[in-house]
Length: 111
Length: 115
Image 1: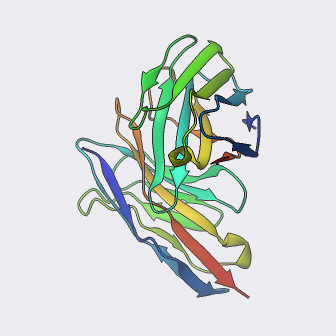
Image 2 (image 1 turned 180 degrees about the vertical axis):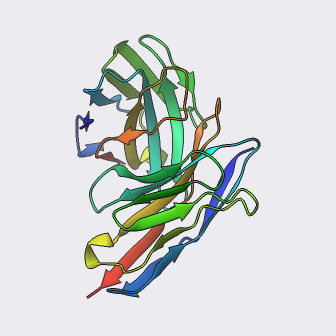
């Protein structure tokens, strides 16, 4: 079946540090891959997505590249801000099957 | 912007009560979803719907039912609430009927506590 694995954290960084949150997946075929973000007290918001191998999704300074050879979709940001503190979810959608979310990674950015 | 609203942000109910969670979306989306979110488990799909009066079970449907009488509204029903249903409930919607590869848009969530 389909599954998503991501580092659970919490991840604590200082402002302006480099961020990587690892995400790997298991799926047959060619799923679409997503990163969602959940700010405190809110629902999930789409951060970025990629629908085919080697695609790079980007938004708000965050990037992730769809690597089929390593079945990965790692989230990166060059310089995090305090306002980036949130929970980040990696997810996949395999056509004809249900969305699958990872367990979420809590990020805390300290000033 | 897509807007998905949920009837309550916080809800406290007693064991055995019947509980209704309402979700409304304003973008004419065909697909609607109910998830529960628990620490360390991520989001788990309870039920989803592709169209009015249509529903399909997700990964954890036991103890829940749903209703979709109008396209914009998707209700989650706990027929007899139990303490293990204490959780955060998230509603989502997406377009492209019958195709689940589209972006899902989420409501703010309802934190339900069953005593």
